[in-house]
Amino acid sequence: DRAARLFQATDADGTTRANQALQALNAGGILTSPQVNVTRAGGNVTVTVAGGVVSLLPGVHLTIRPQVSEGPVEVFKRPGQ
Image (tube, rainbow, N blue to C red; front, side):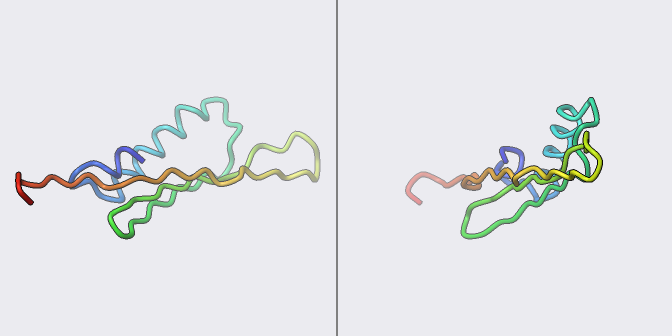
């Protein structure tokens, strides 16, 4: 969520960084249909990553419990504000 929390960052910045991390972690191709969702509300940003894993047993389909990261968006203020 750090990329999405930076001063003047966009949801697209957070999505791009999360997808880059997913590609690096998924070099072996075990994750299927990874999904990244970035939302903002009340000065906070939330990044949720979900997906599935490659089935090793016929008929068994596993999903990854969505992973969520949340934090405040950076705001710069002048002294006295």
